Length: 297
Image (cartoon, rainbow, N blue to C red; front, top):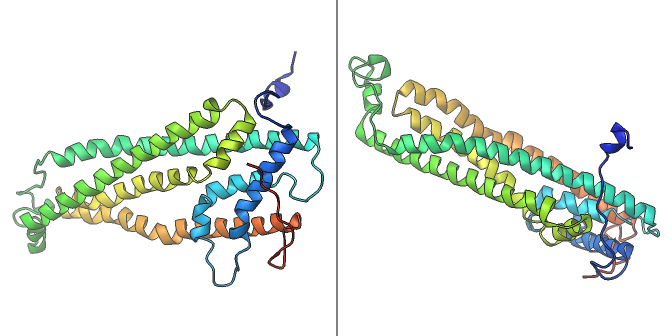
């Protein structure tokens, strides 16, 4: 009988000997060498005057793809002989890595689903064409209200706001469903469709640039929903429209102050890790390649 702590440990399904040709250690070491080869052009680019977020970084799947490639490339990165014990430890770390992937993708799916459940009712409500503006209530812009309230209620302004709200809400619904669909495929692919840990790693090596799209679709669905609020509120009251513009403006400012800033911070740190990893196995010294690892397909 296993005790409680032992039963909670991750169990890694090892690849059966008959499933893939060659030895397990040779296959995984070749995979790690291939990951280092993929990272090399981006990691060894000149730092001065070059943004981490460029064509090479996007080709590697940005944060999500590079994170996985760094994990795989760490096997045997110091150039020493890899032992079977190190292979077992690497597979254990891979199990924890994919647990992190499942958790992250699952959180994205939850957020996208919540936005979807909000955006769809708003889209239906917004497309019904019902006039909700209080034409007689002065507080809402009706009779006796300030002149600019009555201009706000003009048919041209309302028509433009209606178009804007319909477009933004529709884009929010699309982005949230796109994120949900991608999560629906990623989670079973890495948890059910692949027979063992080595198969997960190999599949990731073939499609490391796919996970990166879940984040922008999830974030974009919520951002578009916030941007639609001022135009939705314009059908009810100028006050509601102006107040709901606060989170909309905050969403726009957040692109630079939070998202872009932290993307650069994490990307720059990954770039430094990649340089150190390639330097550790003698592949780079002073920006010059010394040894090129052999890639086995």
